[in-house]
Length: 230
Image 1 (tube, rainbow, N blue to C red):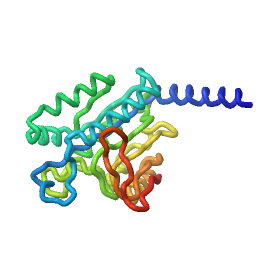
Image 2 (image 1 turned 60 degrees about the vertical axis):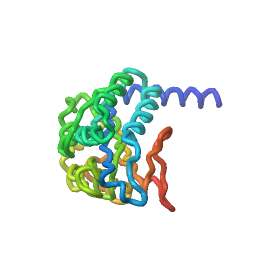
Image 3 (image 1 turned 180 degrees about the vertical axis):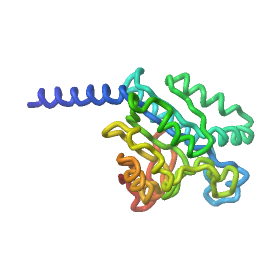
Image 4 (image 1 turned 45 degrees about the vertical axis):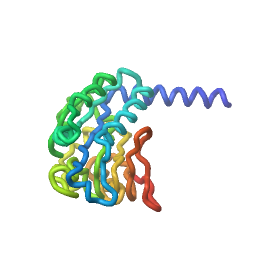
């Protein structure tokens, strides 16, 4: 019986790898806040410019190890946020992010608005042939939207987002059956996850409460009673 169970597990892993390799894994990375807005807060955001990039890199490393070098993977990165934060850091953050592309053989796409993310999902690949097998978000969020430039242009607010009211513009046929979808940001599970499912037919795992981005591990839940839901 143990031998049969091990064989079944191996078959599932092989099947999952083959399935994912036939589609595309999309990771969206939002931008960091700026010190000029956050320095007066009791708990400022984004001490480190690479909060979201580092978490996305850790996740990409996991996915590469599991699915192998042939898995098609795309990073969609909010460019203006890293141009602006680069001035604060006195570093070329665009070039640093590009090293991740080289290291993990990624398709790196820069974007500026939520509509760009929708357009990529709908038209970035021939979706009748290349389905989205996975979609994950690393960045600021609230219960109703991904906030790509939170506290960057405006203190504690944003001008670039993907709101749950816009999700109906995503073509449900973009996604593979059983696609894995997760937001690692705060509060997504309180509303946006439900609206994502209504719009796309895929379940988005999201947080009830806040999450904390770490340096050497994936984001963790930090609110009392917080949990992941889909």
